[in-house]
Every structure is written in C-alpha cells, then in structure tokens.
Image 1 (tube, rainbow, N blue to C red):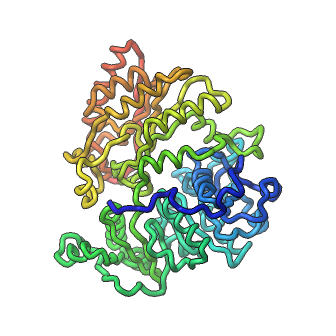
Image 2 (image 1 turned 45 degrees about the vertical axis):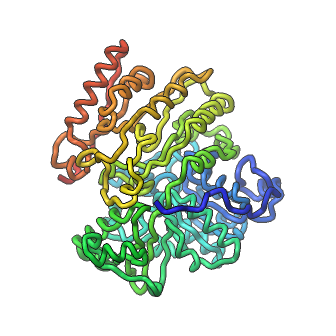
Length: 534
C-alpha cells in the first residue's frame, strides 16, 4: 500500500489563534462572536447541520478546523437565488459543496420516481428543503454569488457521479458531475486526506492545476500531461505491455469517452468494469475519459486512514448535537444515530447494487478499542436523554471490524471485486475475536445497560464464528435483527455478487439455536430487492 502523509502532520494555518468553535458558524453574527472577519472555507450542504461525526459536513468541518482553518456552514440554503450563498461572505480558499449524506435524488424521490414528502436530514422531517441534483445547483449558485471563488465538490453524490454515468431519474447517461457543475475540482470517496491537502495547497497560493498529483481527486484538462503512457481500457493487466507499464507507475488508463458510453451499452459496461477494477489504492492507475474537448482525469483512490488517524478524526471536539438554530425541532436522522457508535469504515463485499465499496473502498479502516470505549463514555456522560442503551455499534458492515488480507503484499496487488464472492478468499482473515472483545468491554462499562447491533451483519462471515453468533444473540440483539439476503434465487444473487441462500439458512440455524439457548424470542427481519436483473 502506498505511504501517505499523516493527516495531522501539517502546520496549522492559523495556529491556535482562534481556538475551537462551540459550533461551526452558520451566520455573520456567529462569526463576529468568534472574532472572525471571514471564513477560509465554507461548506455548503443539503443536510441540516448536526455537529456529530456521522454527518459529513461536521466531520470535514471539524477536521479542517483542526488544521487551523476557519470553517463556516451553509446548511440547506434557499437555492432560489444566490443571496443566501453570500450570507457568510466570500471564502478565502474555497466553497466545499456536497449534496449531504445521501444522493439528493434518492433523498427526494422513491424508486417509482414519486416525490417524497419527508426528509430525515431536515428539521421536523420536512421535504422540499433541498433541490434536485443538489451538487449542481449549489455549485452554480456559489459561482453566481462569487464568480472568482474556488469550488470543490465532495460527498457521495459527487463521488458516485465522478465519470460519465447512467442516471436512473432521467433514463440517460449524464456527463461527470464536475463538468455539469462547472466546479474546479472533485474529491471522491472518504476524502479527508484530499481535502486537507487541497486546503493547505490553496492556502499557499497554489493553483488548482497543481493538485493533479493528489489521490482521490478529479480534474478537467485540455490535454493529457506529458510523460504518461496511455493504455487502452481493455484487460490491460493481462498483457505484457500492461504489466510493464503497471510497474513503471506512469501509465493512465483510457476509458471510453462520454460520447461513446452514451451511445454504446457495451462501451458503458467496459468503462464501469475498469472503474471498479482500478479501485484498489495499492495498484490503481489514473483514469482519463474524454468529455467533448476536454479530458476528465481521475486519480487513484486515497490511501485508507490508519487506526491512529481514524481515532483522531472521530475524537475531534464535536458538540454531538444539532446546531442551536434548530432548537425545538426534531431531526429524524439525529434521533436515529445520537446513541450509536461507528467503529469502522469500508466493505470488501463488493455487492454490485451497493455504493459502500465504491465510495468507502474495500480496505477496512478501524478505530481502536480505546477510542470506541471513550466515545461510549462521552455519550453516557454528555448526551442528553441517554438511558444506558447504545442503539447501534458498527459501521457499513457490523462484523468486518479488524478483518483484513493476511498478506499486505497480496492485498496491494489484488484486483478482485469482492473478498467474499463467489467464495471467501483464503487470504482473508475472518476472525471475530477483536469484535467480540470490543463488545464485551463496551457492555461492561459502568452505566451501560445494553449495546445493540441493529443491522449490517454479513452472515456469510458470521457463520465462520459460531462464538460470534452466540455472543451477538445473547447480548446484542433487541428483539429482532435486520439482515439482507436480498434474494433467494441463484440468478439474481449471482448478478448481485451475494452468497447463495444456503449461507442465510445456516446463519438462521445458528441464530435460532443461540436464541433458544439464551431463552430469548428473537427474530430475523430479511431484506429483499425486487425486480433486480437476473
């Protein structure tokens, strides 16, 4: 795996002059109270501002604050004009634009393309507080408000739309969101490393064109840079030339152009396959895709955060509460996660319908046991309304904590799209011991009555450890456990890259036996996908 600069090794931009804000400011009055004449960075988001690491604007905002930058928040601004985007003034460095924790179109519409009337990320759950394709609209309004401002796109909406992509809502292939938004740069995946590096380079007066060596960024160019060898987007890793160029590290993989993938489904499938196969930070190469007269340059994914970096990011001084401006209003997403704890990121499942692997990567990024236990104690001691129950402990997947390839050299060279399909890789460490230890220590803390696991258990891994299943059922299930077999038939399951229904049935047997032994009446709630191809 490539070596990355430590996330907290940069010299602070403003040193300790301004200290830590109780909440990142959302108004000029709040800026004045902090003694700020301007913001260095303004984050524009489609979600209500909740100062908690489960919400992207807070995590990125607090991380940039820890780097010494003055960060403001424009949460769910009225997009009907540019005036609300002038509320905090012009940022000295850049606008960071995100649609929020969800893609705005998924947030606003059902799968039948009917408008939703509620929004879990909005005060009182009200719908209609964000526009369709929020990233595009917000970026355009930022440009209208301050024509010379730098605009940086990020978040899951921008990340998953970084190349030409099929848009379900309009039933056509759309250009990269970077092209349509007319922004300066796009950061994809978990972008802590990229956003910190971009911020510090801009603070030194370097232009966007100097960001082309940063992992996890997408830029537009008029021409491909000199010194790079372009490889056609076929099975290049199987050719002698491709193997040689991979060792050189100075090759870029050519994707079919935006115009080609719009006209030819086979070209689209080829581009999609390449994007997925070039997603391992250990061996991914830059990608280039023609959009009209310009080249879209996609750098390799970011290097995953170390455990020490994960701990620091999740232990930044979050208020762990909604901004005071929402006083008296309920925000459903906050109610859902206020007593939950994230212990890891990423997923090596590679399910074809899921955005987790594509966005967060296959390498599991773990917090330390001590960091997780400290957060539980903070929730116990500082979060109003806590009654002793941690509502959920986990991450994108509940039981991949501390799992990794047994050989880092093999991991860095691997191009498998999944570590568990069609069968669990023999190089994968599937031990649940670290997770069992964490569970036991968490529920033993004073004042903690129960630590629940609500969902996300990967059952094909769980059956490898009957001890884990017993521990889970005996101590961490509250009546029912949501689980996702997704289908029962081999055809659709193979297209999903999900295990056969037999793995689910084996897990159910272990689950039921453990529940019976514990004297509990517990149930599994299976999730299924309707109308999936296959």
